[in-house]
Length: 317
Ligand code: FO1
View 1 (cartoon, rainbow, N blue to C red):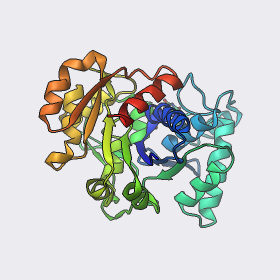
View 2: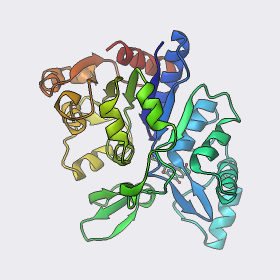
View 3: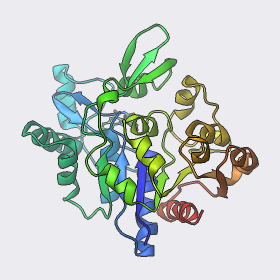
View 4: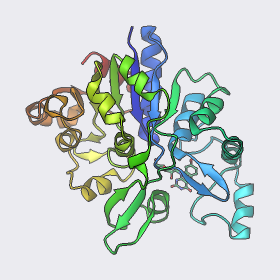
């Protein structure tokens, strides 16, 4: 029996989660728990958006827009056009009609007093996901990007409006120091055989999850092996603009530098093992020098079978 917990966010997290489900179904393993970053969440036009949760939810349900990487397949933008005509929302940020249905349902349930965990449980009932999703916390701790001129803005504005071209000096999650892990996270980690860190953005996807007080501690105390998958292939980030985020926190865009950023459990860090891409096989020696196992594997998540093969490589590490 392999009880698995995954820490994930963004498009990389969604693709990886599809592979986790596939690999675990083949093994006859119990339903895994995926702890999802909520730092990207925001209020816009009166509704609560949870981009990383929705990316993973839609991908598991098979209703995601695989071209854009976010939102619903075949969505239309009639309501968005009307919002723009009113000058509401953000002109650079598109809310699809089907996607807005999710935001309205979620916001209604939140307004009725449900917690984000309860809302996600309700959203998850619509489709047979084969995975239990949990938000990292029930507290709103949106990610803010601090620029060198002292300005700060919501992560989504920096990401989608400025395409990460404004140089950040820091990423903050105001209030995270008093947030708690969502109910069920500590128990899932304590009962897990393996914790997988998805090849998501280490700074703005995995970073906020690890910053929730109690999550790092739960991982350190877990009997599970903690295995990370490098988001770097051939010395470059696979997608997104994670290199800008890494540079802002002084981490080089390389498989070994990101391994060093997470740190080895044997040295007070996070990881027991780190999967690196075949293209970065040279980094294996320096990764092992950090005090963790380095496993070289193909890391392109080109389809579900490829993602599942990565998960298999991690589970047998
Ligand atoms: N990304 C964009 O680049 N442009 C958009 O207009 C946009 C809208 C959007 C709406 C809902 C949603 O859940 C995600 C959306 N995204 C959009 C994706 C999102 O900004 C980011 O890619 C993730 O937050 C990063 O993980």
